[in-house]
Structures are given as C-alpha cells and as structure tokens.
Amino acid sequence: MSAETDPKTLADQAAKTILDRFGVASIDVALVLGSGWSGAASGLGQWIGECELADLPGFAKPVVVGHGGQLVLIRTGTGRTAALFTGRTHFYEGRGVAPVVHGVRTAAAAGARTIVLTNGCGGLNPAWGPGTPVLIRDHINLTSATPLEGATFIDLTDAYAPRLRELAREVDPTLDEGVYVQFRGPQYETPAEVMMAKAIGGDLVGMSTTLETIAAREAGMDVLGISLVTNAAAGISPTPLEHGEVIAAGKAAAPRLRGLLAGLLERL
Image 1 (cartoon, rainbow, N blue to C red):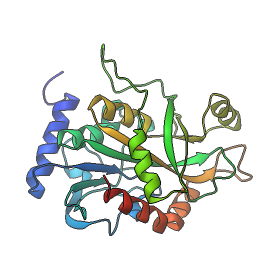
Image 2: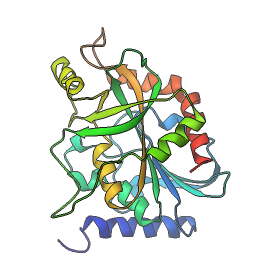
Image 3: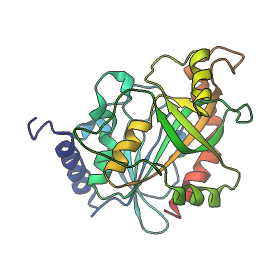
Image 4: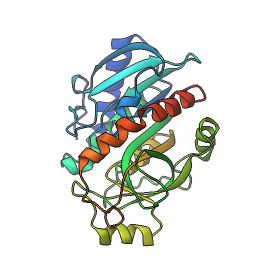
C-alpha cells in the first residue's frame, strides 16, 4: 500500500490540513455527531471556524439525511479546542472500514485524546422512549469487520471509559446505560434479529459506532459513547420503522442533547 493510500498517513494529512487551516496547535477533544444529533451542535463554545468535511483529505460528503457535512472547531469555556464532526461514513455505504474510522484517526492524529461518539438507535427497553439519551457501557460488533490489521491486539475491557460515563452522569444524573449492538445495515433489523440482540445482552441496536470505538482505542483515545433512542426496535415498535422518526426524535431532543454536550465539554 502506498503512502498516499495508507489510512494512517491519510489521517495525518487530514489532521495537518485542519490544524494549518484553523491555526490551532492541536485538538483536545472530538465529537462525532450521529443521526439526530447535528441540531445539538450550535452554541457549544466559541466558534473558531468550520469547513466541509468533503474538502479534507480522505473525507466524503455524508449520504444520510439527518447528518451534517461540516467539521466545526470551537473553543470551550475551559479553553480547550473541540472538533465537531457533524457527519460520518457508515459501513453499509460499501466503501470499506478505513473511511468509516477516518474521522477518529484524524482526530487522534490532530492530538485528541478523548472522543465522544454519538448515534441514533433503536431501543429494546420500553422505558426508553424516543428522545432518550443512553450511555453506551459496552458493545457487540455484528459487522464481522474490524479496522485493525494483522496481529494488532487491543484490549476492549473498558472500551467505553467508566470515568467519562461518570462525568456524563454529573451533567445528567438520570442517564441510564446499556449495551449497543451494531448491525451492518442499511436495512433495519428484523424482529427476530432484535430478539437475538436482546438474548445476547443488547439494549440498543444501530448501524455505527463500534468500528470507530475500536479504532479510537487502538489510537489510545478514551471513548464516551452516547446513543439517542429515536424509536423502539422492530418487534417492540407497534409501527413500521422509518428514518423520519430518527430526524423527528433528534429535533425534539435537541435542547436536552445540547445541554448534555455543553456540560460534558466543560468537564472533558
């Protein structure tokens, strides 16, 4: 593989482009805003600058409705530099694993040691209605894929840092937590697949996050995962699933999500 196509070299190039473009020495913390989360991005700190993700090396324009397509840099109240990725590449797009985790690797290459990964998902717990944020305690990766190559052994015992989950509960003590199960997608899960996910210990089902978490842990980053329950999963929901529910739930929950992210950024 040439230096031009090596994923980590490409991440280094993207990181240098970001730091040079915005005149910052490094990024301290990164946030990936998933389906339903982009509306919570405003007002989180002092604006430094923004650009289209597609203008950066290795990135493509997000294809999913409900995702933004920008990288936004802000200065938090504590003086730290935060990078908000308002879109992501999904594994089901068929571009391979490397583009899926490119944002994570770029953030790490730019200096970030902490990353907040968010998503919209289906909930298996009837107590979690649409618009409920849930901390990810652990995950089950059902994609049959990994961003790791060769004999790269990464410990995932605490893939989602307990310390960061405690910080999140300082912001919102009502936050519950659960196990996130990633399916490949793009089709929604069948009721039988949802029952399988529940049987193996899952509480949340979706189509992102786990591959990014693995890449983040490989890079030595601490990970906080937060799912926004946008709908009850198939077989639990009394109505057919549709992406419009994800968008609507995100809009309705935007004030709560914005408050959660703002409180986190004051502590990270």
